[in-house]
Length: 87
Image (tube, rainbow, N blue to C red):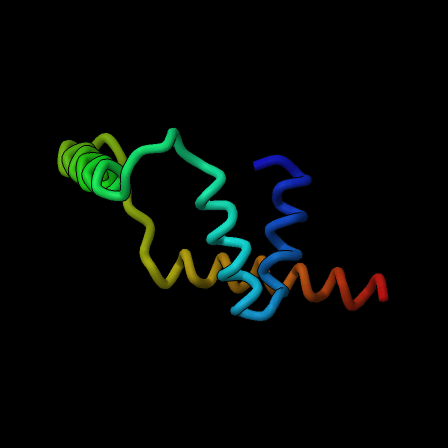
């Protein structure tokens, strides 16, 4: 992710939940090729199966959920600290 994208993400994470949900919906709608919801769901299922198979073959590793959440919380904390220090 670029520095600009990280900055935008950090700012977005500071927004109230309902605003984050609106932004997420808009971004989700902006991505794709016009596939139907059923096609998108089938693609996600195929991708999940592909990733599971790669994991089972030892080609990739998993990250613990608690570790991912802590990384995200740390990112939010850093963003808040930066905002507080810049006024």
